Image (cartoon, rainbow, N blue to C red; front, side, top):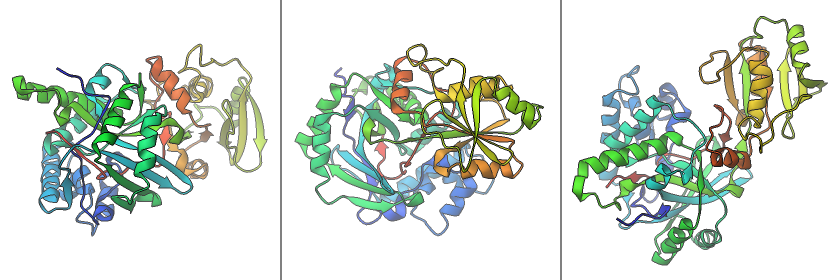
Length: 418
């Protein structure tokens, strides 16, 4: 059985001409059901009716109830039947561009080879949670399509870059403004020579990296196994379920933001005693204005209405010694959250919360000033090189190490199972 290339074209299902602005929606996992319900008010064609189908069921419906997946399938089918969504007549690639303010990133919507994910050629850097994996598996099985893309980062490939540059000279299929004013623009690549050039060039890549969407990727692998069992001897290895929907971007186009921390208490210490403990491992300097770290191994701390810049005075691990322990998020956890505050497990502790850098350091001030939190910590953003080092070492990052922005939209392209 011939193996599919790392990136394959897909029978994409996308918004019909002129309908993208009504359809595209934020990713399913960046809002809760109430927020989605509010956002979809007066928008019968919003993709939220597929990705957050509980909004069409009584409030309080368990998001993992079978009725939610059935409703998602019904709504997706209705959008196809009513011509809001259209399926390509042949497998295509897509150029997908995101613009948020001055930041622009341009990549491809592809079918990423599930076999390459299973063999770790598409590398991971996070653990997945069974309940979130199960949710994605059920969504895909019922809707019979992958509707939310994962994000893959790859080192620049000249042949792919050439096809993208040529494609974006043409008028796009659509350009629509999503949440936060992010502009989502899509071009269809249906020229056979361009399709072959992308697939062939992708096969030369030794490894690529999951930037975001570990649950979507893991779910696609499970769905492939399920479909193989269902189809038995008729499984050919080239069906659409052998790939999963991914937005693939060159690493030099992507932006990781800081992912900051707030803590609920000082572990029984007074602010003065806490500060004394912090000074055992850090040089602490009070600053005017916000203490936004400008480099690795700088940390901002907001405590008692004041900002401090922290720099370690103790030896910290290098990337060569241990790419995970060398991350700034790990250094802060080791020297402050664990050693001083007794927060051992970020996955399980309810004494710590996380704030995406897109919200700014003002959000840390707000959380602490409100009395909900005792202190806030600002970090320098994890780099893509650090992410790649961790993935290449077959390790996983601590929770909430990376915050990618701009976010993709759901409904831009879906990948049917058959």
